[in-house]
Length: 308
Image (tube, rainbow, N blue to C red; front, side, top):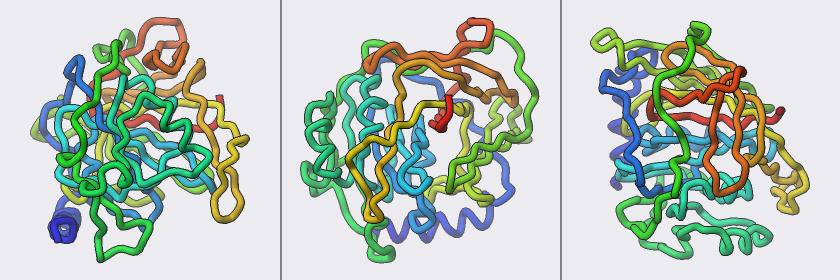
């Protein structure tokens, strides 16, 4: 009942304010050091939209999955939404990504049998329905498997923070290229980030997020926005034994190593490089001249895109 009410209220809000509206005028969020993380794996096909709780995430990773589609891995630190979802299954890519967050709580709907040993061995607090059934409920207004939601307040609070913060924040060392919009293409999904400054507060500019030509909305907050956007080009392996119902192998993102990136912040685009020497190390970004390139603020969207 709670989820249905939230969806109905947010739908009305979205029609009024998010389609072509301004980004929030609240000051940019900056990280609190030493904060433990909650990670939630979120469905992202059209049947799963609009999402719930996505607008409250400090970090959102976009991961390629089977069929050229994408799923989201949302990270929460200071502010937990009442409900998040729809929740979907874990992938091997999640294990390496989350290793830089210390020992986070990980909410996901399940995993293929071949992946379960890696999840058990990882430094994660299991918050799947098998471990915390009472934290989950299904929305009768949606069809499975796009109907599962989690209440973060009902999850374990035993996460541990990382020894080094996953991102660095601060002023950009050099000016970038003024950019009004940036597009990121996957095989079966296209994200567009459009720079917009709220008329009431120029310093609260945001990149509004659209997916396949439609504003991406979250039921509690309207159109999703980001202060920093990273297109991180990565190697993607296709040797995972896990397959979907059509026999397509699950792609695995290599988020450890080095590669190229594009960083969007402050209405500008920066050509960049990324580096992460091992799974427990944070990801760092630099200019092409080698100067550290910190991020501007939360929310941060990281799009893991095949191609290095």
